[in-house]
Length: 619
Image (tube, rainbow, N blue to C red; front, top):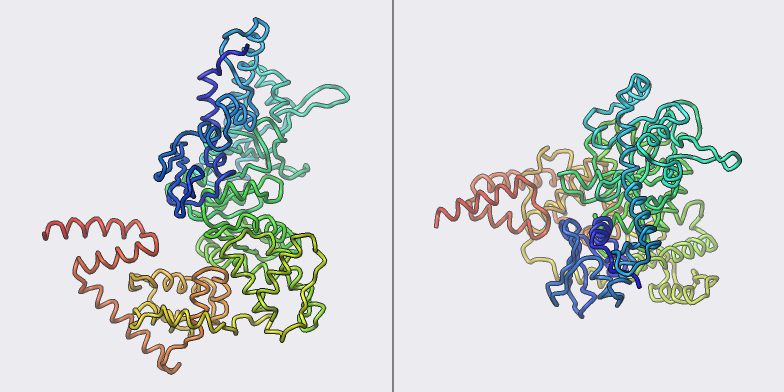
C-alpha cells in the first residue's frame, strides 16, 4: 500500500503550477486589473463574481464562497479525489508523485529517493547552466559577443534584466563544467544541454559560440535556452529541444520580463525573435514577446489573453510575413471572446522590429503599433486579395473565404458584428449568411452563398451604408444637449485635417464619457497622419467604439466646413478657461466621471487624492 503524498512534494507542485492556466482551461476568464474574473462554475450567476489571483495563486467566488488552490479547484470542478487531483497536476508538470515512506517496500523507498534526488538535480541544472553562461560573458574569449551586443545598442541593465550570456566556441565547455558539479551526462542530455551521437554514443554541447538567452517560466525559473550564433553557422537561432519542463508550443520568450515591469501591461506585441524583444525593451517598449521557432499556437494565445485584453501581431511586410499573419489569424479567431482584441502590424519590407526601432525611434514605432490593422479589417482585406470583386465568381469565393474564418469565432458580439459587416459588404442578407454557416458546420462545407439572389451592396465601400435600425438607436440615445467632447469629436471625425491645429498637449480634453475616445482619436490621427474619416473608422472597426463612430459619421456637424476651424478653436479656448476656474468639487466630479469610462493616469489619481483631502478640509 502506497504511503501518503509528501507535503514537500505538494508545496513544490503548487509552486510550479499556475492556477490561472488550470482554471482558464475550464472557465472563460477575462482580465480584471491584476486578477482574472469570470462566471463561477460552482453556482449559477449572470454577472461575474469568480476571481482568480495569479499573485496569490488561489480562486475565490464572492457569490457562493468557493475558494482554494489549484488542487482544490480540480477536486471540485472535475470531481476528483485529492490523490487524483495531485496526479493530474503532477502529470502536466512532468513530475512523478512523491509519497512518504509508509508501507512502501525498501525497493520502492530507494526508487522514490532516487527520483527525488534526480528532480532536485534537474531543478538546479538549468540554473547552473544559466550562471555559467552569464559568467562566460565576462571572459576574455567573449569579446566578440560583447562587441556584438554593444553594436546592437544594448545596455548593461537590459542585458541583466534578460539574463543574456555567452556559450564558448568549444565542444564540451558546459559539459565539463556541469560534470565537475556532479551533473551526469544523461541528465544534461535529457534537459537539452547536450547532443548525443547515436552512432558513437558520445555527447557534446548543444550551444556553441552563441549569445545565450534564458527562457523562463511565469515565476522566472529557467526552462530552456535560445542561442543566437555569432559566426556563419546554421541555424542562426537555436532553441532547447522539448524536455520534461520545456514545451515550445506553450512558452513565450520575454513574457516573464514583460510581467515584471512596474508599468501596467495592457497589451502584448508578438514578434519573431529574442533580439526583437530585447531591442524593443531597450527602447522602452517592454511588452513584446516572441514565439520559440514555432507559429503562434492556441496555448500561446490563451496564456497571453489571461494577462492582457489585446495582442498585436508584428510581421515583416513580405510574402512570408503575410502568410504568417494569415496563420495567426486562423489561430486567434477561436479564442476571440467578447472583450478581447487582436491587431496586425506589418513592417516595411526588409525591416524587423530591432532595426526599425533603432532607425525610427520609440515614438514612431509606437505610432506604428497604434495604427496596426484591427482583426476585422485584416480579415476582410486578406480574403479579397487577388480577387476582382466586380464579378460574381470572385465575390462567391470572397464570401466563402470569409465565412470559413467567421465559423472559427466563438458565439458573441464580435461574431454577430462581423456577420453584419459581411452582409453589408456582400449584399447578402445576414440571416442567409448565418444559415449558410450553420449548414457548413453541419458538414456541408461545399455549400456556396448565392451572391445573385439579392441586389449586391458595395463590397469595398461598406462604410457608406447605414441600417435604419442603427440610426434610430443612435438618435434615441443621443443626448438632448451634446457634451463638448462629442461636438469636438464630430468636428474632427468629419474634418480630420483639423487635428494639425490642435495644441500638443491634450490636457484640455473634457473628462466626460466621450473625452477618452476623443483623445484616442486625436492620437490616432496624429500617429497615422490620416486625412480621411474612413481610415479612422477602419481602425476601430469591429469594436463598440467603431460602431459608435460609424453611426456618428452619418451625422455631420451643422457648421459650414470653412467655419469649423474657428468653431474648434473657440471650444478649446472655452474648455481651457473652464478648467482654470473649476472649483475643487467640479474638478473632482469630472475626474470621477472620467474614471467610470477609462483608467486614470498616475498623475490624475494623485490629483484625486489631493482633491479629496482638500474637500475634506473644507467640510
